Length: 96
Image 1 (cartoon, rainbow, N blue to C red):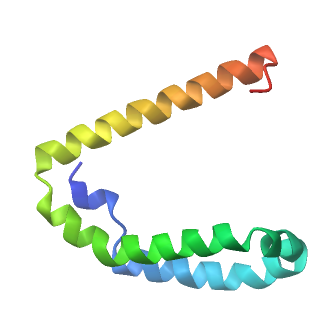
Image 2 (cartoon, rainbow, N blue to C red; image 1 turned 90 degrees about the vertical axis):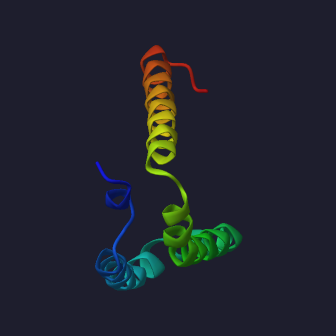
């Protein structure tokens, strides 16, 4: 799969933004107090998304295709291992 397939297009980003704006009133009514309590995390995540969107494409163009594929393979393997371990812990009753 080409590396640009992993990156959201402008259309997908705009669509996601519209969906999130539509969901926010529901979140505000149902769990607004919880969101207020974690506002620093929400702020940092929002800033990270904006920075990633603005600069991610530029950085991606500089990374060679082979290097990108290697990094993605390693990250997917780590994610799979983490999910497997979490599933094993859940079945054994270990809370950690």
